[in-house]
Image (cartoon, rainbow, N blue to C red; front, side, top):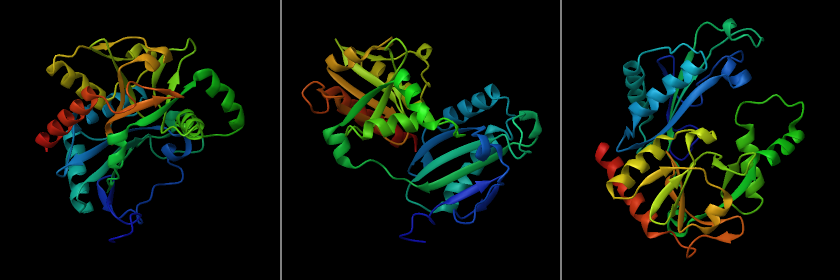
Length: 294
């Protein structure tokens, strides 16, 4: 299997382990047909998923909100995750846990699927190159209004639930940006296509509030705790592109990428154009905590 990433790793479906090339789900699974599922993504440090309990608790809450019966206890799911990681036999893993509503007839009625299906992926961990952290990345802003207009291109297309994020990222990649930041109808910043956003201004760490429609990221929460430990107030508040353009430092967070400095937004350079001192220090603190938890 060495050298072929498509075959490396392991998949657990309903407690049964498979190689990635042999893992299969029904073509009638509602996660496949309708995106009718919930999921979490983690990465391992020394073979242990970081913040696993918080991720699994959020997965359980997501299923509750989607009216999907949680299939097993969190303890059982954690045990299956560890077995999958062990079977993968990789130095470190990208771990994805999915709970689908399950298989049912071709009908929208969620009650037609009675048995939720759980899937665990333990695949090779692919992290951003070092220069991303040394040089920073560029963000591109995309408004909900623009996305709505762009959705006209997808008129008549039946898709899974990530279409807005896919279209937003596609838009900014054409502008030589590496991540999209979506703004609401009033211009307020919401979040990245797959990340949370922070800025440093006047000695305070600011991030959009959950009321803006933000997914409360697990990494986001860890960062807020680490900032508090360093004597920096972490405040949830409405932000606008002008706040981004004029801030001292900015960064995005996600489980796989950790903390990534932002040095440009649209065509505007942030701060000195280099990763900020606080962002660099925070990344080190984050990695220290993740390493100690392993």
